[in-house]
Structures are given as C-alpha cells and as structure tokens.
Image 1 (tube, rainbow, N blue to C red):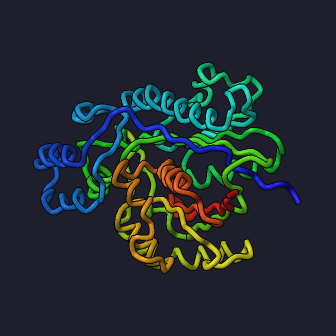
Image 2: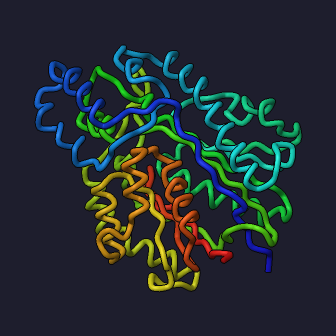
Length: 350
C-alpha cells in the first residue's frame, strides 16, 4: 500500500488593499443608483453577507473607472505574481524548504489569464529549479482549493519523496464592472474579495495531517449554476440565486456517496472544513449535513474578515482549523462550477 501524502505546511497571503463593507456599500449605492433600477431592493445583500472587511488587488478608487480586458489583465499579472510568491514563500518556510527543493508546482487560478502562467513568472524570485514540473489549473472556481489539494496528494503519492507545492491565487474583484449590471453582479460586489494560499505536500513521516482520500461529484445539467461569462470588457459572474437551496437539498446524498466509497459514514467525520460561499450557503451546509447551527465557526470568521475569495477561501478556513488543532478526521469541502462538490479527507497527525 503506498504511503499517504502528508501536508507539511499551509500559508495564506492577503491582497494588498483593505476595503470595509461600509465603504463598499457607500460607493455601490452612489454608483449603481442611476445604472440599476431597484438598487435599493438589492442593498440589503451587503448587510446580510456577514462581511466586515475584504482585501482587494487594487485600491477602491481603481474600480470606479470602466476597465477593459487589457487593464484587468495587467492588474491581474501585476498583483497575482506577488501574491503567489508571498504565499509560496511562507508555506515553504514553514516546511523548512526553499524554492529549489520543489519538484512539482500546481497553480490554481480562474480569475485572470496568464500565459506563461503565474509559477513561470515567479520562477526567478522563487528560485524554482529549471526541471520543476509546472501544472497550471484553470476553471475550477470556488472548488479550486479543494480540487488542487486533492491533485497535490495524488501527485505526491505517485512520486514518493517529491515535494509538491500547490498555490491558489484568485483576484475576484477584478471582475467588478459598472456597465451592463445584473443582480448577480450586485451580489458579487457584496461578496467577493481577493486572496492567495499555498501548501506543501509530500509522502513521508512529517506533516500535520495526511490526505486519506479525495472525491468529486458533478451534478448533470448544472452548468448554469455558477461560473464566468466572457464579456467584451472582462469576465462576468454567473450566480444562480438557487445555490443555497440547491446545496441544502443535494449536498448530503453526494457527500454520503463519496464517504461510502472511502468506507466511511458522516458520523466518522469530526469536522467539516467548508468553503464559505456566503452566509446563506453556510447555513445551508449546516442544515444539509445536520450540523448544529454555528458549527461552521471558522467559515463565518473567514467570510467576515476576507469575503468570498473563491478557491483560496477554504484553505484560509483550513489554516484557522489547523492552528486551533485539527480533530482526528476532517473533510475539506467546496462547491464550484460544474456544478461540482470537491472533497479531501484528512487524518490529523496529532
């Protein structure tokens, strides 16, 4: 039986600018009043989002001017590379490693286009070897943190002893626009933040947790639940307002099926570590998994402090759970475009 993949470290790196929800509401109200009839009916979403502060790639004033693909892409490249490097450096430092020790680099990002991809652009700063394998992953959206984690575990098991670095960077706020507003755009403005996270995975004795298993479930006919649309000025968000009830009704049977394939039951899981898509989604997750209300406390705290950063968000939650002390068995879980549930089952080394 192959050795299990161990998580040696996990680190996060915030975007450089801080926005309070109060400031965002004030600006949104002034900007949208003449562009979106009925904006007053949508404003409560800013109050019920459960967010106090968020971090953004650019200062708030930058978003007040209409932007096109070239400007959004340049902002993505300028900021994402630095955030990639800061998260990666912190994770490697925790593991007692350097860039030259990395054998495989997985880069997960769906909020900008970079060719060459981010790890290539950060190669000189990070000191990655020229023979390091690069695995850029696009299109996973909010599920990217969990799916990237699972991929890191599989690659570590496939190459025992290899150092796998997985880095997730998302700059969701760059999709903000003032023209052609939809209700989904307003909700995204109330929820989205930017962030990055990284982890180091390797087979061996060290590490704070081992990756026991991973699983995915994609629901047929659900392509329009969540994703991006390609507009003339940039990426436009696709949000179906039915996401919370969909999660409440469908998450449990999918989770039960994945755990059964691992020889486990829901009762065997001591802690679910979930991507907090929003307050209503957190409530739906607790209801679907028969958790006590308020059980997903780290999820609410991360949402309040950072907003929904898409793929890195669940790794922020995992980092908080790890610092408090992971229970014996936990399941990292995130919902993303597909519509897909992605999970990673962890066993604490403590």
